[in-house]
Amino acid sequence: VNRDITDFLVGGIRAKLNQKALRALPILLPPFNEQQRIAEILSSVDASIQATQAVIEQAERVKRGLMEELLTGGLGAEAIARGEVPEGWHICQLKELCEIAGEYGANASKEEFNPSLPRYLRITDIKEDGTLNDDVKVSLSIEKSAGYELENGDVLIARSGATVGKSYVYEDADGWCVFAGYLLRFRLDSNLASYKWLRHVLRTSWYWDWVRDNQRAGAQPNINSKEYGAMFLLVPPLEIQLGIAEQLDSLRTLVKVNRDAIAQYQRLKRGLMDDLLTGKVRTV
Image 1: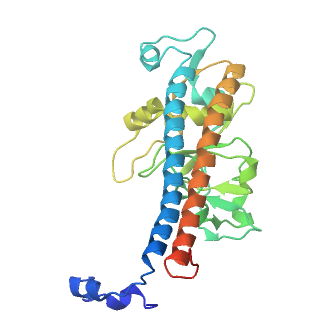
Image 2: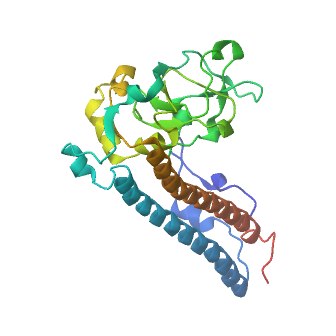
Image 3: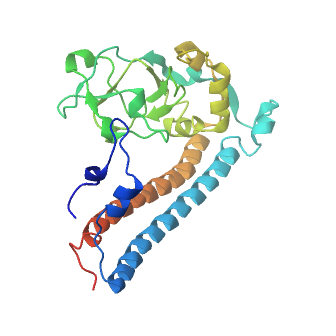
């Protein structure tokens, strides 16, 4: 019973489990009443995962609608496309809001991750939701890191590759980080714009439309520093930016909390399966 399933595979390069081997595969068979109890326990975890996923989906639907409302001043994307601007808002290029507008990252080789060295952020370290992937940490030597250390609120945007346009906003809680050459750094003038507001702007559908319209096609799609800097943004007054970010961040936090909960449920289920389906823990 303790044999690995690979012991039953047949064939060479493309090994497979044929019907004969499948029928011969030994399984542990608990008493029927215990089978039922195991199924109830695992099904209850599945139900919790499904309910939590429903909360995430609802929160994301609300967030998409709220983004459309808040980031266009209530006018809607179509009105903005016609050139309408909410009272008190203005249109300007991204570079006009920046202290640093499109600085290139380090062109240096990674090193094995070392907590005593800065973490080296590459495009592959940034997930689609704008958070960091902690499964792929690498470092950069201190000597090669000079000038590339990130400061709170720095915005990184991917300039090349299949994920051109992907963005990440650095905050101090992410630890000591530097950034690599296929990422561009934008640092906003805090008197003009909030990085918390810009983080949401860079997740809108119209931003991604702009990326598709402006990237140069080829083996490696690309948008350079000047092109990003010339991107026009609809900019509300700073106090409104902060209010928009506060509302959208509350939904962002709700989604994160529930995604973390799903990960915990999944870990719980794997542990329960290991215990219950092998007889390590009995339910009756």
